[in-house]
Length: 141
Image 1 (cartoon, rainbow, N blue to C red):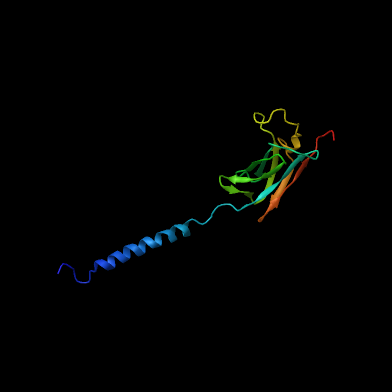
Image 2 (cartoon, helix red, strand yellow):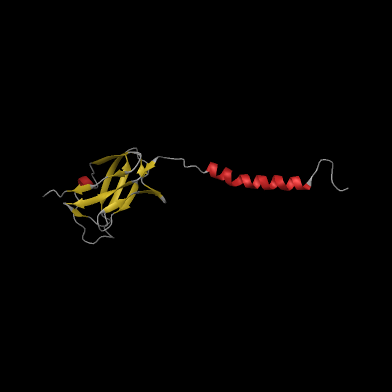
């Protein structure tokens, strides 16, 4: 008899299989989303009523945390991205900067500094879906 008293090879096999079955559950339980609360943000950007294409939209949290960014499409619409694969912006107050990347857009229209470098656009991102439309006005209009 090669078996030790109380040792059952079949029981050991079931212990190993049982332990391996628990691994996926432990991984999923440990991978819950932690970190800042992020909410979806989208909208449209126009200048004097006309949609602005290829405009950079930046929501900078007032507390200095990482911004969310987007670029408008042909209809002026945008959808913010917080980080790679995470749609939206952190909840809380943001300063919004709207401008063009000069090496991407040739002959861009003039966007007044109050929407860009000296932005006075303030929004509050709240839990749930947020829509912010910006109808920018040139100083002369």
